[in-house]
Length: 355
Ligand SMILES: NC(=O)c1ccc[n+]([C@@H]2O[C@H](COP(=O)([O-])OP(=O)(O)OC[C@H]3O[C@@H](n4cnc5c(N)ncnc54)[C@H](OP(=O)(O)O)[C@@H]3O)[C@@H](O)[C@H]2O)c1
Image (cartoon, rainbow, N blue to C red; front, side, top):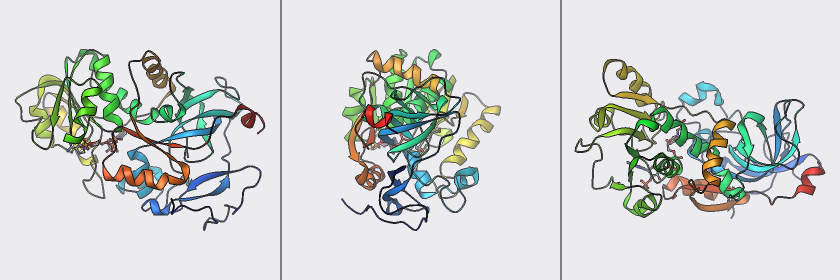
């Protein structure tokens, strides 16, 4: 690549050359496109007593990272991500790597353990993560695969749980071919439901291969025209109006709004998510929205399914850290099948032990 270069940034604490205690990282000091990302050297993060320092081998890329990069919708800036510039200067959250150091109160991990979970600043050689946001890495996955799990698979799991998947015989997943959707299809199938996935023509084969019983190509068909009703709709993409989603639900069914891109700079798709629970007070079926919260208990549940061969990350492509911008550009094109991951370093126990 490459437009990301190793060089001094405007941020004064970032040195131009590697020094002891420094690391290679993608750094962003203002909101904007991926052009604001610079690969440079910066200080390794300091950890709190309940945190772990992870030597990052791979990071996952997801839509949330795009939102934190651009600062859009603006509502999120008010929610604590940084008013004028990102509060966290290193992007990326989904992480897989090796424990390099532990805080004084950490009990579950020791140096050298292979872990995955959510950190603050995964596009870097080292990242700090709360102990309760990490779990042992699934033994059957590579680090690149494992890094693609924590954000998107947890969202899919929590969305289906909120929609009472255990009682749902028929499930409609809108946005079945993306980061969250590819996990949701597999998880809904693993729970025994009959699954219909909504996606584009180009990704229909992918969604079928994940186990979906029926595919609706949104270019030519409307899955919410009422000709078929579902016990659960997981609405991940497309911003379908609430009234159309309602007519595709059984009276005792549930809608869970997870997301949807491109509905304005101020609130994004959030207006629909806020309206759903309000409307639900007065009407059936049940209309809800999800704000996911990654936690080690869910990572352990996902690991069981992964190591049993019932859940597999769909990795479209892995990029190296110096091509993180290219990865973000691919995400923005909407062509990604499943997930993208970023390879950062090879595992090396000795290196971790020498910290
Ligand atoms: N609530 C939460 O806590 C939470 C957590 C994580 C993510 N999210 C949100 O969830 C959304 C999806 O995230 P993601 O990581 O899965 O994104 P993603 O990987 O970009 O996938 C989105 C998918 O939506 C599909 N799509 C686009 N237009 C569509 C339409 N009209 N109908 C059906 N599918 C359509 C695209 O596939 P095709 O090419 O096949 O159309 C794409 O694969 C984002 O808005 C994200 O911010 C919310």
